[in-house]
Length: 308
Image (tube, rainbow, N blue to C red; front, side):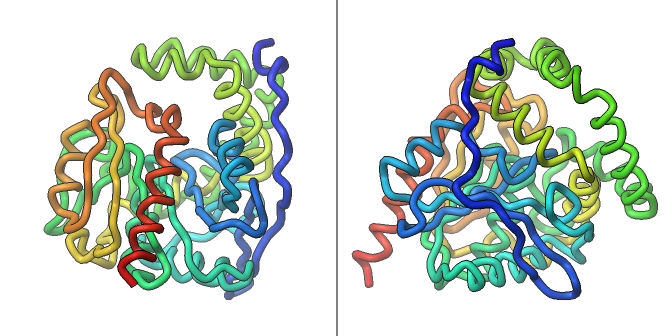
């Protein structure tokens, strides 16, 4: 009932971009078409509309072109499993070129974090600044750290690599069946979450956003989360210390999915990074700081311009 009290405005533009190999990626655009572009990369699970209302309103006020992307296998994107995390950057480059975007900032929540870092690594001349909110770290290779939910991901990844597409199809079918119960399901997830995430999910604007994203992004397909787990547990295709773009990292100290220590570990590896400690916040805490995050990305952009 609370979610119905909040008007979830449709994106100003929504569509797909051909990225090669017969594949397409879906996108949703908010804010100003003439503004500086920030790509917002959703979590796992999630889709192109997983962008807080606060961030959308900020984009309108500050003349920002804010774009959410469906990863392969969710929403309007073609199902696909990348060879590694770095391969996503090739798709993002094509999307940016097609939409007439030269330079950009990138924000990545949770599972969007690895793809944010990959894009910053691959396009240092185009990515002006990056923000990661409770991002997933590597679980193999020299930059790896153990523990957290990705420890389980590493165990199930071989199964998902073989059966990810049918599992995703079954999950999407289940979501269609339970669509009338989506709101109480989100309430239940909130009750099972740490207190900080429970408070956030109880806020009407956040609940409405998650419902809108879930029902628009997952009603046709739900393969992306399973493909993410497979790709995250492989070598990423680049080393974290080789990301030279400025990165700002937000992490809650009660995160029950990606441990707080994982965020500290990643910032230690990154050569140009700062850590933002979200006191008393859990995995979704960064979503409640979206204005601060977008302001920080724009400030990094300004600093890069001033150095040229």
